[in-house]
Length: 163
Image 1 (tube, rainbow, N blue to C red):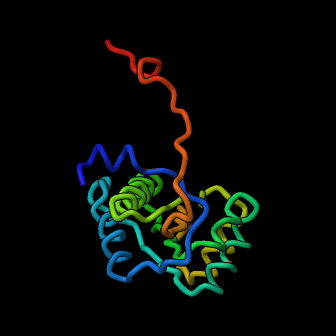
Image 2 (cartoon, helix red, strand yellow):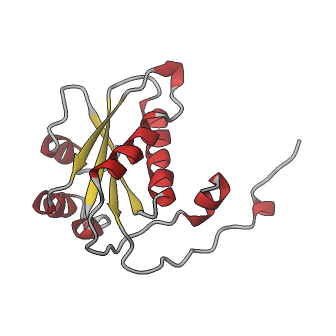
Image 3 (cartoon, rainbow, N blue to C red):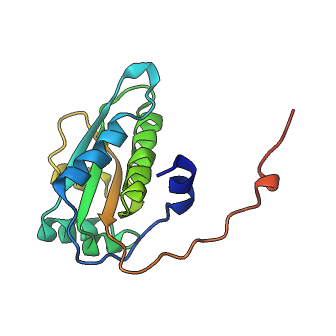
């Protein structure tokens, strides 16, 4: 699929069908995260796949109320990071690549915040983060239960300044 079509197609999906996601597709999605831009090639990320339905539901309770929809997902990818100078930028880039790769495969996804949330330490412990790793994001994944309606975006002309 053309890159710009993928970018235009990507939406935050919060309701999922019961169709399972193939492990090979999850690996493709994570490989896209691994290829993200990273300052000084630090690659500080680790990706934890949660595919057990009970564990997904438990994780959904941890990230409630804003991420409660995670409980209905078919998988989650938890993005952890080592402490580096640009860990948040690097792992945010990896998270965005994951969202775009999921969209390219027809899989719905939604980014759930992590780093600054009060549940960050609890989620990190739940996924057995190693010493020094911190939570950056939780990504809910699943085939959309229904088409997702795009939300209006600001006009491009209001966002660009030319010097």
